[in-house]
Length: 248
Image (tube, rainbow, N blue to C red; front, top):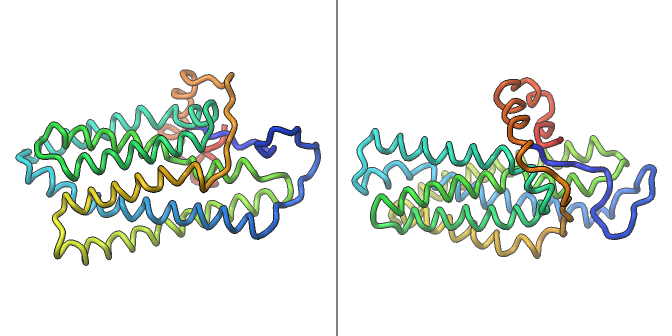
């Protein structure tokens, strides 16, 4: 997956060449705070789902082998959507892809949590994987695309670090929520509540993050093979810089 990280701010006016001054500290902090909150809440919902979804599927009549088949199919669909998602964000705008991904992801959790049978359970699993793949990387790309040349590497590192810390905190909060809410809520209800939280993030995304213009000439089909080779056949490339596999 390749998320473009250009040096120019996405504005309608042309950006002068040369080093760009950093935006006001308050504005930078605000965007980082929003990145942190969105990452924290979505990770909390995802952890709650991950802690109980197997019991939910088994309770709806699936055999253990069917659980594995459902999950494998969902992850395969997510993988297919993950590879071109960076190019989709470049072409249509990362904020649009973030919004769409969160809405699809949250809808999948709600469908999975409230489903009565296996059919809608499978639909929920597939929607969840699709939405998660579409959303993946968009938050970092929105912020990184706004960085000029001034202190660029340090600021990229800060964005990645804030996202990583928020992810860890979200996992802790998700574990605590399962331990507490699991005593009086069913597993399906907890997944559905997490889905509602993710849907809320999807509705807030257009308000909380700046618009990101698309690139109409960006090709979609050609990005998947290069993304797969970069991800799965050469993992050391992503090990040195956590954000490098988001870049073109």
